[in-house]
Length: 200
Image (cartoon, rainbow, N blue to C red; front, side):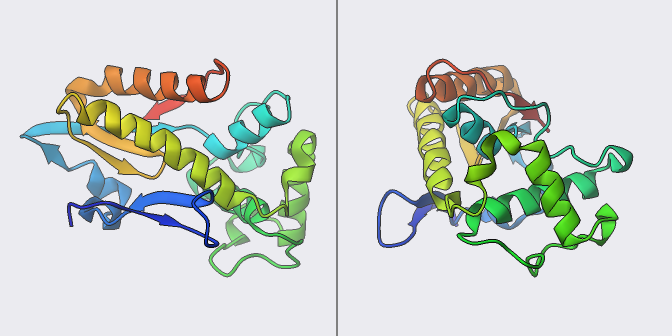
């Protein structure tokens, strides 16, 4: 399971396009941190709030801090994860969702699905038209293009990098270079815009 393949959607090469097939894709993130490359420890560098950032750039607006931080009184990883899943569900759907998606547990947020959904819209009113627009697969195509450029950069230098959609696992000694390349590739795609890259 060392060969990657890209999965496109809707009978077009302009939607989807993310890479799958690598053995590391099936590992929980805590286990991915235990990977070694040529005996070296690794880091995983992740594009922070990539899809919200793209939308805000396309709408000519400024992203208001952390896109998924809408539950100030519940500032924990589980609550943030629920908000992220809800945000993604709302941009992937082509019509309003009357109930939470089956894989989203809203109980930990202390809100109903309707309340959570409305809170997301209120925080992101500048891009409200993006919700229920069915654009998730278009954004996946964009992030797959970014990932391809990052991977080819390091492949040309003989440096292994393992993609996990919009994050990358690399030997720790190459961390600084990876962050710089991720930022450069994003900036080249979006008119010099900057983006946060987090290191796990």
